[in-house]
Image (cartoon, rainbow, N blue to C red; front, side):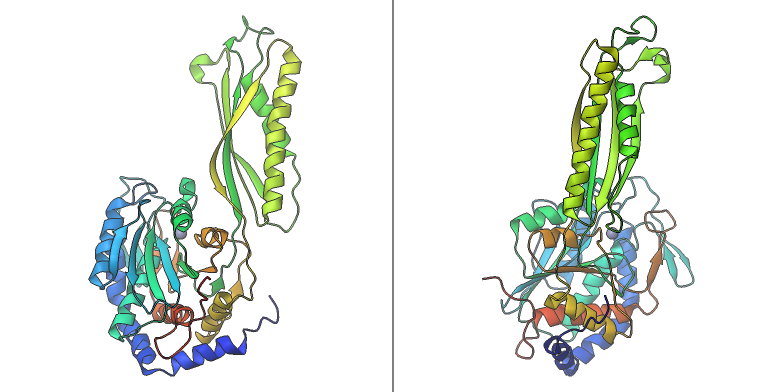
Length: 416
Ligand SMILES: [Zn+2]
């Protein structure tokens, strides 16, 4: 985005904050707290937490929130771990990171340290976000900072894969905030302020079945219908430059014992995405139309029975967008620049911030700082070198939105 300029009021809020002695104290604290944070992050990442199995890690995160003096620490009815750092009630600001990982139960979770890197599945995505939350709370406490807004800190379930940002979606369906800051992964400097729409669905095709020879011509073949559908999907055209993609990622039909059998049930799975919700909806309709046409053609080919289909939706994340001019985005831009980096605007995104935006809450997603790599692989690592720079910027962003009691006005606007 060329010529992006945050408003003078937003810049002034940051200057005011940075002039406060308590802020200098908090920023100093963050430098000292990098090593203890990493230690705590490793302990949390050692707890298995594949999507839908986050409870043990959630309880450990609750204990960590309690240890920092948060109020009302609990698991919400969806399993998200949340606590309150009470301010003066001027607004409600939430900061969250997800607890779940892509690693199944039984994955060896032993840290391996090489130089400044810690290799451990989940240590970066997104236990580094949980670490950032805890160090920010400690910095607020160490510097005795009271806020105008009430601060909520949350570890979220069901972000990854089949979870489909479910923990955040469910939490936001029952709770209201005036600003939401997600922390996911390490890369700091990119502004995620929208969300790519993502859908995953299964289509099942049903026909009669029987012996490859004996039933030939007497029944249709669900596998043929599925294949016809895949061929139609393969030929779909999508609008360019809109992040619109599709992928038939799964095809299940038949088995080797039935190598000479007509298959009665066949299944495909499709993952499709777009930065624009109208494109995503149009693509969805085309895929469903392809399924119907495939069944019609297979039915007509044999003329002896009707091939049918049904569909199951696994992930349905809407495409969302916000103006880049909202105070939260301006504030994030300002703190990234202040940290000596050049802010980059992401197009779309696949983070929990999508679900906050979808619920009408101004939201961004940022990285926890340092560096990381190997996300979603067993070679995932986190390197916390210079991480305090991002932690400091995160603290400043939070305080720009929440306001320091008696000193700065919160940029988060309390909903009427
Ligand atoms: Zn993540």
